Picture 1 (tube, helix red, strand yellow):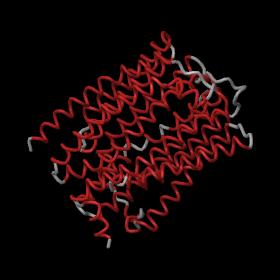
Picture 2: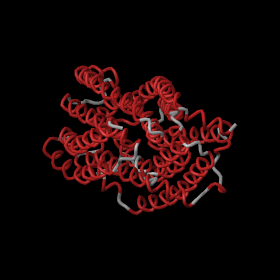
Picture 3: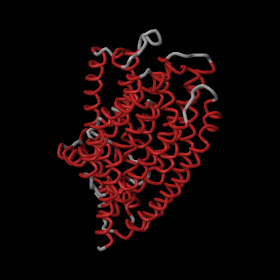
Picture 4: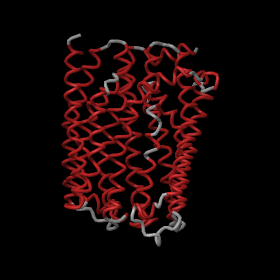
Length: 445
């Protein structure tokens, strides 16, 4: 029975069919997720106002550190489980999952304690230029949010298991269920006139935790009980195996999050938390297009890992050609959204926030640059070719702060967005260069 379940994931003939089904399902799920993210912006603004909404965006950007402080175990687990499934090795699959869950538990516990101590002793208000008249309990809110997010991350590994099984639609369904519940919670707060940052923090953090706990129980107690994490399945050697690959993902993740997170902190420090809101509004609009593109791109990671381990190079070559064609279509979508951006903002957030056309153009260029780069990097991630990506992403992380401060002083929010474009450009070029090199090698086999 267990062997048949694993075999169902590794059939060569089913890989493309499974990919198409998951892309189709993910389009619906991610489409709704995108709508949810867009609806969250105005309702959160209505509950908090521009200033406190900016504060909450800063909290959200800080919480993203948690998603990238797993030493790369999440993505390491994803690649190793995909590898073991391709080899039909159920025992190693079970041990890998158990090891990752228990290792993440202790790691998240340490991070929660360390971050709580740091937040308690650091003058956050002075660092972020926060007017305490707007929020007297910002530190306590930050500590609560960090702690709950750390616990959530442990259970979120369930999604990585589904990604390894080439079932990203299930992972997406878990995520969007949490987001939808958060949206419902925010409308409840708005309906009852609750404008507390505390209440918003609880809705945004506790609800996703409950959803992920339910997903964990349904997955390992009912759907795949033979893969349920257990202390007996914990293997020190598996930690090393996961971290050997995962550490590279970790450095890539941390470098990427430094680029994203520092943006909100720099805006708050150079200007005020209120200025974070228009930047984030523009960011949310164009990352909606990014999320739609990722629906197609995400399944290719584990499918590429599976095909690479099975030496099915023809499938990789054909699939990547299809992905490259999508770049032209998404570019056209960006042009249309930029031209209609003023109207979209008016319908979306009415007159709560003003977003200049120049910021929309800069943001569109930046997000499309990320899409261009990730088209190649996801293929490289799937085969474990990370070294070049790592160096260029580290370069971007080092350069983003001084360049953002310099250009931010000169050109305001546009300058910060231009800095992001500049620091990410070398990595995008490098990813394409590395891809072309590997692509030629695969076509010759």
